[in-house]
Structure formats: C-alpha cells, structure tokens
Image (cartoon, rainbow, N blue to C red; front, side):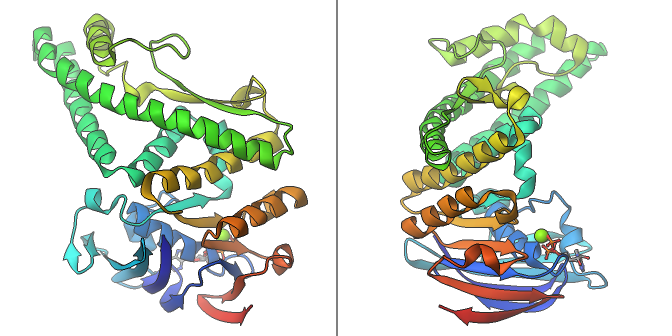
Length: 371
Ligand code: ATP
Ligand code: MG
C-alpha cells in the first residue's frame, strides 16, 4: 500500500494543499498547532471514514467555509486508485471511490493504514471498548466481510435490546426473545471465531516485536476474554453456547434492558511476563506494549492482504527513549514501510537514510530537501 498524493480543500487549517509523498520516510516538521496532525488525520480519514480524534465531520471543515474535501491517490498492489471525500455543513459527507459513490462499508479495506498516536496508550489503560475497536478495525481492514458481520451483529443487538426494554415495560412478551436469540448467537459466534483467530496471530506477532524492542527482556501476551466464560476457555460450539447463555440470562437482561453476553462485552487482556499491564504495568512498559501491538498490526495486515499498510506516526518520537526510537526506525527502513511521521524536531531522524522533510507552518507545507 502506498499513498501517492493528497489534496485538501478547506480542511482544518488548510485552505488548499497539494502534496506528493515519497515511498520511504515522509517527515512533517513544525512547531505546535501548525497543521502536522491534520495531514495525518486526513490520510487516516481516507482509510477509516472517520477521524481518530473522534470529532464530527463538521469540525473538519475549515472555519468560515461551507464545505471542504479530501482527495487521496494511492496504490494497492501497484494499481492506482483514487478516493474523494466531500464535506458540507448542511449535508452528510460523500465518499467517491474511483469515480463511483460508495457507502462507508465499501470503503473499509480499500486503503489500509496503521496509526500510532499518543492517545493510543489508552489501548492498555482505557476501557475494553477501545481494545475491541482496535481489534475490529484491524480485522475489518483485512476482511470487509468481517466488517459487514459487525454491522449485522450491532443491528441485531439493538433490536434485541429494544425488545428487552419493551418486555420490561410490559409492551412485549418474553417469548419474543426466542426470535432474536438464535440470530444473535449465530452472528456472535462468527465474530468471536474471527477475533480469536486474530488475537492468536497478534499474540505471536506482538510478542516478537516486544522482544525485539525490549532486547529480549519482555514477553508480551494478548488473550481474548469471552464474557461469561472462564479465562481462555472455549465451548465446543460457540453458537450453541451463545444461544444457551442468551436464553439463561433473560431475567437479568429484562431487568437491565441490555444484552449481557456477546462480543460487545468481551475484552483483550494484555500482559508482560505474566503481569496484567492495565493494572500493574509501568508507563514505559505500557508504551512499549502499545508500540509492539501497533507494529504487529502492520504484520497482520500484510499477512492478510499481501502488503504493508501505510504507517502514520503522530508525535511518537518524543515519547520513546533513544534505543526504542532507533529500533523503530530500523524496522521501518528494513521492511521498506511507507511512513508519514510528525515531529517538532529534526534531530530524531539524522541517521535515517531515505527521507523527505516537509516543513509545516500555519497551514502551508514546503518540501525542504530530498535525500
Ligand atoms: P502539535 O505539534 O501541537 O501536535 P500540530 O501541528 O499537529 O501541532 P494540528 O493539530 O495539525 O497541529 O493543527 C492544529 C491547528 O489547526 C490549530 O491551530 C487549530 O486551531 C487548527 N484547526 C483545527 N480545526 C480547524 C478548523 N476546522 N478550521 C480551521 N483551523 C482549525
Ligand atoms: Mg499534532
């Protein structure tokens, strides 16, 4: 995967910007609040159809403008493709892929990126929802069928939850649940199977990365925790198990008005040398583990799609010590991964051989030199 060009019109603090990217390291240098992250955000948007800063699309439009756009040219297995996003304050955004308007579900998987940003520490420290999202996005980028299954599951879940509330209020009969339970169980089993397979792969890949970065000191392990199941255990037939669980929980669920078992309640436990990182990890251990998980995403997507995604690194150099920085740059260079990276200081990159500097200042970008 390679991003070739980016054009922004009235996007964040850019009135109009056109950039051509290089294959190796693209380094965006500038002081705070100049527009470095905005560029990475736009590239990320083209892969995921939403910002990683969790904002509504309206916030992406330049202040005082009625609309804006992102246009991105990329190559997938050497074939050139074009994505265009148009934003208007009074309408939903539109996505156009190679000249054809598409819904979001057809975007996922078209263009692949892996982002590593300071907030990613929440992947370890935060709530389970963040870890589920991490896993879902990775699997979806490699498997659009999985993304469609997630949509199906969430729709079924919402319908079942509405029914639970109606039953609680005496507007529906409890027997009606039997209509939704088998459908939800079937979808849950498919999602769980894919997640278990992915976590097993991640577990191996992330541990390789962690050992490399920590100088063989630390072993990282990821395990998938199914709500309602003892640690690490699995039922012989997950669909039957979900069906039985959904059936057995009815009274508690009706009382609470929500579905209490299923992939929307699962978690991933991250541990180093057998110690749960969320509860006991040091800040540095957590940071290294997130880096390992992010680098393993690259390998995961490559193993599923045949090529590395584009790597987006926002402000991560200042967060790592010199040894870890060098390991990271060595890895990117050795694997030939196209990387867009932001920093306030050029000093971090002195050793890197193949690089292009972009100077970012108040919504203007200049190519400084090419080596
Ligand atoms: P830092 O080094 O602090 O991370 P940065 O260069 O990454 O800085 P960005 O987050 O890319 O900074 O850009 C921030 C700038 O964009 C700020 O000056 C902010 O006011 C401006 N900005 C954000 N949204 C909009 C918008 N919708 N319209 C115009 N300007 C915006
Ligand atoms: Mg920034």
